[in-house]
Image (cartoon, rainbow, N blue to C red):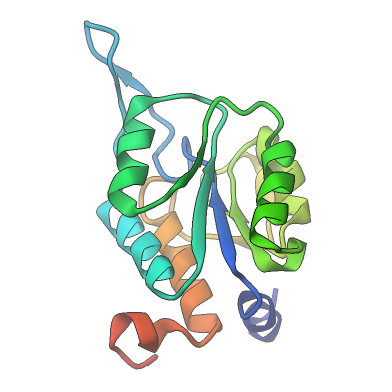
Length: 176
């Protein structure tokens, strides 16, 4: 996708929806001896999410798994739209469209696997980490250079902010 098309699409984004495992994390699930689930999140991905919030763009999570650690991380980042253990992500997507008065063109989505394909096709601007499942990468508007849990979310948030002209507002830097 060319830069002009990305700029046009990014300028319409009002809501970013993220998957968790393989997008916000590297997809690993670590279980300790007591059955507690651990996940590793990248701090710069979190900063990108916070910058989107400062720019007035809402962030939501839709994930197929349920994990307390996701609730904790979302709270740290100020994400109030957290939807876990969702088999049909399109149902929550529809509710978010209605709640926020959005159309598909106002939605950015990042996913990495088969369950994300419908939203990758539908969102106004879609992305997949470079290590996503092949079908997800084929459907995404943009494939990030970085992997899930390794900066892919930050790469996408920066692209949205810079392409929509909001970068300077939230970073205090000029686009160089």
